[in-house]
Amino acid sequence: MIMIANLQYGWSVFVSPLQQAHGWTVASIQVAFTIFVALETWATPVDAWICDRVGPRFGPRVVMGAGGLLVAAGWALDAYTASLTGLYVGGALTGFGAGAIYCVSVGTAVKWFPDHRGLATGLVAAGFGAGAALTIIPIKMYIASSGYQAAFLLFGLIQGGVVLVASQFIRHPNPGEVNVVVNAATKQSVRSYTSKEVLGSWVFWVLYVCDVLMCAGGLVVTANLVGIANSHAISDVMLLGATTLSLALVFSNVMNGVARPLFGWVADLIGLPKTMMIGFSLGAAAYFFLYLFGAVPAAFVLCTGLVFFCWGNIFSLFPAMCTNLFGTKYATTNAALLYTAKGAAALLVPLASIVTRITGSWDSVLLVAAGINIIAVFVVALVLAPAAQWFQSHEVAEPNIPPKVPEMNAA
Image (cartoon, rainbow, N blue to C red):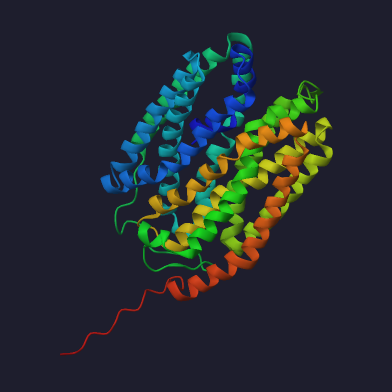
């Protein structure tokens, strides 16, 4: 997961060099980012289905290993292409690869640790959220010294190669290998629902809409963090011995990673709906503060860190909620279906660039993102929480109590 973090969170440092080298508009370059996010999410149900069908021993290794090869191929193509079409194909390859790696990683976490599902998912997702903090500065420096093409090629080969090797040590539990032990504060499904049943459940679609709302704002800031800093003319302002932009890039990725296990752990203690409302409320405040104080270097670093902190939690909370409701047997596929919400949200990223070009600033985009978080709080409070409670009261058993088996007639 650490090895695919740069595909998303390191993308913004390549945008300006690509624009300078080829004269492409930022909006056209960001289409490649949208393609990456869309395929990273929309292709995951197929990846997860293949993983589950091949089996717990070899399924994760085959799917994740193939993902590593695609990641290396995608960035290698980005290094050599001289056309937008090539850039888009590179985005597609890395999207397919990252999706395969992500769905296997999350599916592995939710299956092995039913008693701490929120924390386990958060820890795994933290690799994706914070991984770029380790390499974003080296990539930025390598671009400055050797060019963006060399950075694409070198780091693409490293990232894909490490994934290929690491994938061979991953497997899912065999049937009966993991005891059905559940956190006493959490209710979980007594049976596993197929993907067809999940898609027919209105609770799933409430989760999905809420996920789309939350993904949109975070993706816009992720893809345009450099542009937002440049709009305030603070990118190169020195702060604590580093430029404001460099400090913001590292701090944001660290906060993104910290949020995932932290919110997952809190959710295991107080429940998922309450934790979601807390996180989304903080997110609304983060976007609003970035709108108010983004022109101040120190405030820009702190506010972008808070944005990523409040956005990162969705990648531990939503998969945990999905698995709690719909069971573990098909958890990899079901969580992948929910993860496609990120792809739907990615369609809004180019629109944000267009709105900014028309209005001349990022203010309206940040205010809309704050409003989205507020809407999400109400969705959880008024719809999702009551829906989950109703669903659990009808479909879910108390922890550690086996489901009732109909009595057999003595005859």
